[in-house]
Length: 312
Image (cartoon, rainbow, N blue to C red; front, side):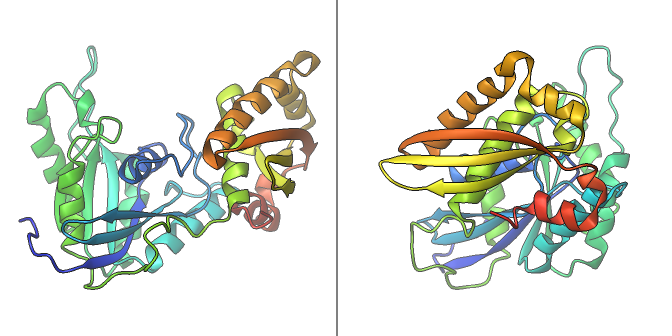
């Protein structure tokens, strides 16, 4: 059923799911801009990021909250990520649980049962009192669409979802129907008077995230997991000057990030500067340093401070 009335509706929608399922990509696509960083590496999102979606007809405001992937915590950093994800759930009017379509790539045996990696997210829904919609992402990669129905039925047997919606965040497939389903569960009225309001995060947070995104794209193995970014100073003007520190947790990681004769750090800085300039719509001078904070991912206080951007 699609809500066809013209009553203004608005509310918060928490996007939850396992790591690397496409939550940030989906929010960016819905908003029409890259507000949340997205890379193929699990654990890219570390704190809840709010982005406001606006629709004129019918009048709709959805404050999407992109959350870190829900998983079984193994470290202090994992615990912070789960904490952040559950904070995103706390004030939601509706929840979108995102999974991905079953794989039927050549040589693979199609599996339509519930993924084990999705179970921590499903378990988190047990305490949720608001409607939950299941979004099945990446349907563009599924050749045999007949697999979708039994796959969704397997998930529906574990939770009373308000709706089950197949989508593709990268291709924009099914998003209009998804918004219509979410809208049905929003309270009447509008949240924000300012139509230009998009997020409650400061610019420094997004600048730090764009630097971290560049780091993630150019380092491998365990380094991305132990990398964080702190903005030391940011001076606005016709030329915005940004001084930032890339934090790693081992001396060996510092050498990897810097690279031979500083070439990798230079590449990271160039890529990050281009992204920041596009975001701020002005020229940027970016200076980067690399600092070792031994074992920060295992320290609950340091993990919370560095992972959530409390210092930004």
